[in-house]
Length: 235
Image 1 (cartoon, rainbow, N blue to C red):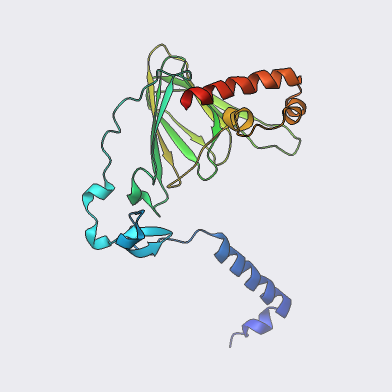
Image 2 (cartoon, rainbow, N blue to C red; image 1 turned 180 degrees about the vertical axis):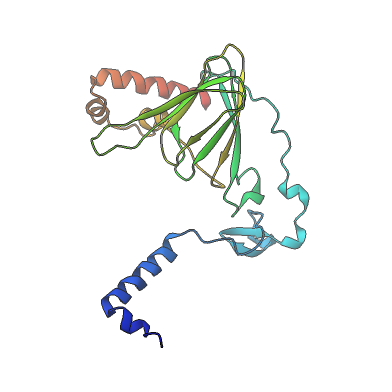
């Protein structure tokens, strides 16, 4: 006859196993409780709740799962020479609870998708046309350094950007380039490094950035003024 669980494990070990089990159960994202949940902004039209108010499944149609125009080139006539078409849950509400989203990125020759990060998702980029130089930088390593992983990508190539790490792409070809991107989140979020550091409102103190970047304060002020000019133009 097999020994009882209590006989095989001491009480402290059982308590530890129980705590670990509870932590693991609490640390994971809850799975969807139904096949889909098309998000709606008006709770009066919703019957089910699963993270967000959901459209009544009886009223859902194929139109809720369809987005048309993903093949339309974006306008790259801007200072960066790029255009990002993000299809996340705010654009296609049926992505709610499904944990995925996509984007199309168009690049003019020399166009750059500047250093940025996605706090809630890893990313897989596929080059549809053109030639890109792309890479990401690790978080601070044990020795305090940060390693760059970068390569040249051509039509048909894939590159992975891990969640939360700063990454970028630039079109190094002589023609326009296009890439499709897949994210592991319905809303990956984005923080552009330059905008966040030098274009925040209100601005980060000049002395903080001067010491952080090891440059004179007048250099920081000049950079901040450039980002403020961009914000004014956008308004």
